[in-house]
Image (cartoon, rainbow, N blue to C red; front, top):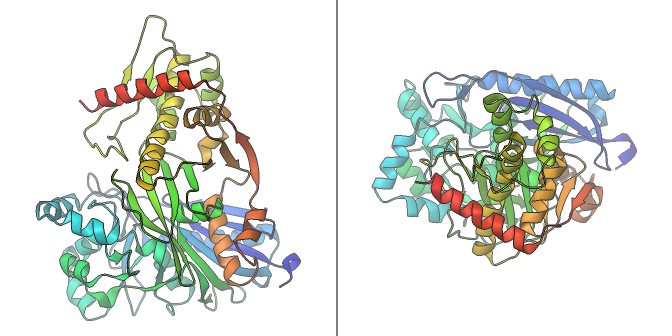
Length: 496
């Protein structure tokens, strides 16, 4: 294949916007396009999206990215797809029309279903087979809700008239003109319906949630030729060859192809994944066990932990306290003092995520003195993001027995050099920032390119992956210990 004449198109379907990025063989971005779409909140705790708008926005940006790059469909070697995970759609097999809005991963309407399953003593059963907790976050109970609450949905599903999919399945169905109803193993592992040991849909779990197997997509690997785009999508057909959930795609895009390597994405919250090899690792710290990706017959697994509030804490400094005018101002304000002056901010605005999983914890500030200033609050807020990440790393090291060699980072907040330095100091290992922040899309591109021979192997993709900067630890061990101890005490207070 001539790399000079070919590119990879990555479709990155996110929670609030759809993006498309064209990459060249050296993993440089040739062009990109992004488009937001509507969110619907019909009841407290409910979050929905229009499935047709999800696809139309994704198709629009794909065409726009090609146009901006001055490329035709024939210049694209393959398409890779990555997506918001757990968001659930059900559509008619004959028409392709959704029977209900997409229920978004943030939606909490099935909390009572999950609570009843826990009361029935079934959480250990689900956890052992799926690696997940019983939580409305995941797709299975969302699907059950649609079948039980949309008129005739259950009957039509049992008769084979309806299809279920997460966003990857929905995009592939539409891109191929309804020829392929598939999902990759990484997305399937987020449904509460997939057995991570057999890598198949689990009939016992399907029976517990009353899900008819006939509506489920075929499970495929994350890097293989799925087919080509249908006539009318682009000027000519393009191969579709890569697919993974967004956080798993970012793990692959960060080159975490060896067990023990970890990536952390700093956004509104943080998503940390640790690649654990070909055997699922059971967490004793309430981390999630998930499929990282499947290539050929080999499955790689990961441990995953989530921090609920990271970048959102900086937004709080701006919108809630008004001590900065823009998010970018926090670095200079925090850097104006040498330390946080004994102050700790625990941003548990919506409870604490992994490994605490305490929905009742609430945000607190401890250690306030007469000398406390806005700068101390800003610095302590940055430290809170880094310290929550330390909690996840501790849990992962305890679960796996593998010490963290370095932390590979991406996401918008990584542009804050002070935060990255604090992170390296508190972890005591290098923090490696990718030059390309769009590692989710890059991972999808790598998976697609490997399937069609655009890149030959993971070693070649690792060469294409480019590092922007490495932050090395500078803080004394004594100071690190004091900060960690102070943080642990503040977290205990937040849980009271």
